[in-house]
Image (cartoon, rainbow, N blue to C red; front, top):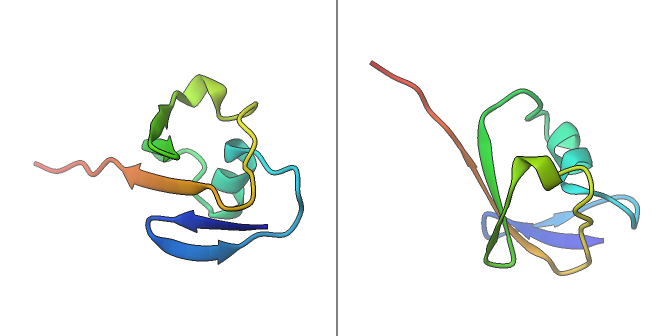
Length: 67
């Protein structure tokens, strides 16, 4: 399956990947992030059930703290 993450094409193994599985694959577990799928924000509570489809466009934004 091919999806776009922040404008870059990414090849993924498998057909039934969720946003939660993608976060794990990208080593982003535990980080504060926002995910937009095809122009719509996906609430964190829906990461586990939101499936990715071939050609999806994701924007993943991480929160950065500072002082």
